[in-house]
Length: 507
Ligand code: AMP
Image (cartoon, rainbow, N blue to C red; front, side, top):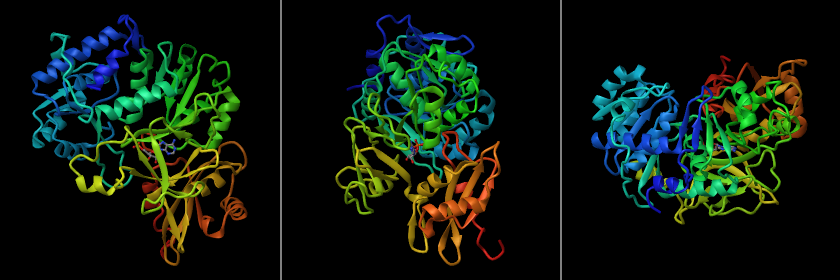
């Protein structure tokens, strides 16, 4: 395989007049527009000195032109480096100093502040692109020749660096090659049955693997079309469903859809597939969605470093609370802390090997070496179990493991027990310092509106009846909402910090 752009292009429809992207306010972009727009931007980037292997950083709001920029970077042989729009100046400075991009593309509103940061980091050129698709990136490229050549690349050459979402510690740049991305998304296209007839609701951010690679590539590799929303909005999604066939989302999309009385079987009658990932989907959400719409959400599991690893089946039985089976070509094993495979049914760390697994962390050879086994398996840090039917269950993150009085507690098990109590919407179980036990199990609970208020006592006694004593939360705190990042992951680090003094003598 060569440049990923060539692979995508081979799968564009023969009739380039076909629509690839449509926004709710009526903008449409054809495959011809996609080719010419990305060609012009590729010319501009080349003029600005972007050559093979050079990084192009982008901290921009989602817009159709953001996709053109991504494709343009591929075309000129560069390495795309998308940054979460939530990052503040100090954080962006770290990424720029670490990755040393040749060009930074940012929102026009943030240009003045970022010019200074970029200058200090030695970034040669700052261009702008706003949510409205306007900015110097477009102005300067508009008159350039759309016929940019596609720079030849090898399988292992980098296509993108994505900084890990870093809910703990400093985020690291995951290096993804042309082959990593191409191989994985071809597999997904086929596993999920994408064809030119599909219309995908695309409401995910495009600085993350889910929206940028999984969703966008499935569309481009099947020559289909996407309904492109700058952000998720339940009403807009419900308006679009009669014209769509598929949606990819994080679990919060599904809970928000369920909160709308408009979500019915009829509303989803035209849809063939709902995919969820990036964070665990509650089994309750899976069940409720099925009973309201008749659709079983297809849950899959992946991460920035590996793109997608497992998926529930398209045709076989989809089981809530599981992430299905390894994707074709992906090897998965559950291992102990020394990398020794564990027998089926045991809980351990999930390790993965395959063409999807990244090339390592940018300029961090020691960290990279520490996270790979000798035989090439990557240690994901996710704790998992494979059941007797082969379905994989993600039990939690290794670093979320609670050790209370010497006993291991996997938060997920306690959360599942609490979440099925009437009056509980959802919970997060964390470990906090305890003078006696080292760590104590604490539950942070969001109550369900409507019915009678569930008490801490009721939660503790239900947990006591179902779980070993050391797993029962010693305290239960109620919150209005669990803190989540943009990808829907509960930020347990914030909860651990907030409740860290619960058992200190002053508390
Ligand atoms: P990110 O690198 O931001 O994509 O985050 C990857 C992490 O999200 C994984 O290592 C898992 O901890 C979590 N994750 C992704 N998909 C799922 C899923 N379906 N169920 C549970 N956790 C998931």
